[in-house]
Length: 123
Image (cartoon, rainbow, N blue to C red):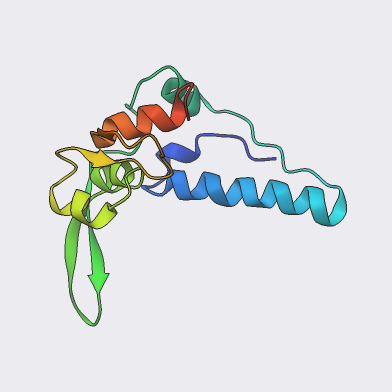
């Protein structure tokens, strides 16, 4: 049983949910088991359209090879995980319009718009 609030514990909430959904499928197919995902208050807020808990606004250093790291904003990284071209989104500090990941309507949105689409009725 996963108790929710996945989206606020790092910038990879989207990827974590994809992993948890794969676990659900595997449990069902391989052993007729279950993986239960409960919604935390942060997921409920996302479903209501609030992006407050996507990730905290904090800068972290990420390693690059053996040299010095690069400073990345965790919130930008979380928002950019919902767009198709994460690297360009990060370079633009999550500003601008992008094609949303896993989206086939051809429209471009802000990273915030992509998060809202993923967690909204259309997502």
